[in-house]
Length: 555
Ligand code: ADP
Ligand code: MG
Picture (cartoon, helix red, strand yellow):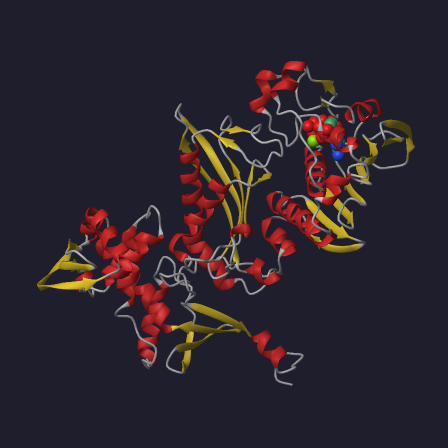
């Protein structure tokens, strides 16, 4: 049964941020999708003409509305989502819309046609044009179709502030993608000027990624489902995180492709987004961002959904704890053997993963040979694997150094006589300011005036003495990050790099197999400590296409 509509009392209305404004077509789309999802839709079809002011139509198969409820729905401050005297209940609302003014606000600045049926023999068509409401019978199955046309027709200033059809549709498309990824169990389709721009199947997160991006990306991603207990300050609560994480080898130049939803609602929340990115940690190079979509369900009571009228930012209690849990969940998901196995075995989307626990992703490789003394070529089923031997060696060294150092202080070696290292004046004052940190990293540094540092001890983990120049690299990484999470990682990455195979070292087959075996033992075999990929795969199908072969067999 669809819920009954009630009017909110004045106090509640006042409590809810007043004056929710429809600022652009993408906002209309968001509100209509919110309503469709709240109505329990399993399928939502969105069609947009031009920049969205011409026409936006959102069609759903949700529970629909009875006629008298449909008439109420377009009035201001009517909602089915709160009891009439609801001040206490506000923070407990779990639906996407609860302010009861989105439809009314849209009716204020556009012509709206709402066709709905709650399962009755005959449905309702409601037209709101310039405040005039017309009601008639309509033939429609259960669900609701809302068509918004002539948006901002009498608001020339708003129209002028829009950015043109391509940009406005871009925003809409981005919003719909965010919903499709946040609600992978719902089928979405988006059409622009009659052409379908993307669809999702409702069959889970990997399919949603396939719909929003492409098959290649969907293959190079791991599905995460994670639950963890966190401290809420008044006991413990359960935080759940679900979604898809593209492997670190897939990167983008901006953070826009890191999408976060809270309780199934896409949000622009820089803290949560940062937490997801931090979960990738050392797997990404400095300017690279991952592709990821996660839906976070914090413990009940943690979310105050009423912070922002556009409902995009969320208020979170004990935010730091939640962000730390998100970061850890993402890091865990990326480092599990399962994620590796998925990448190793996912040759196409329909192949079932074999149940054999193949923890070493390189166990079945056959080394074919080397190329230009830089790359190892290997056969892995119907794929050609190309391994960057330098990057692979760095990864192996890095993880061995990490293991050797553990949580203890870094072992050091005394320099006799001390070395002088010249650095920029800025780096010199950084060294002075972070003397304790450098000390814990194993550098005994004295500032000497000018740009000269005197170095009487250097880190020497694993019997390997750092080059004094590693101090410069360490200072660089301290300067680059405002608060280094663990500057030792940067240091270890530097050290791991020095003795690694340089380009131009030929490897015997035995050496190559040894290297791959050790790479396979790593926690994160697919990226070097600086975030560059260690391995790249070429499908036999790619070669076949290059040679215009229809079949990959001899013919
Ligand atoms: P809110 O979503 O904040 O309640 P809206 O103005 O967006 O306010 O919608 C008002 C009411 O209209 C909703 O509470 C809901 O009962 C009803 N409604 C709107 N769209 C739909 C839909 N697609 N399917 C079913 N009911 C809807
Ligand atoms: Mg709503």
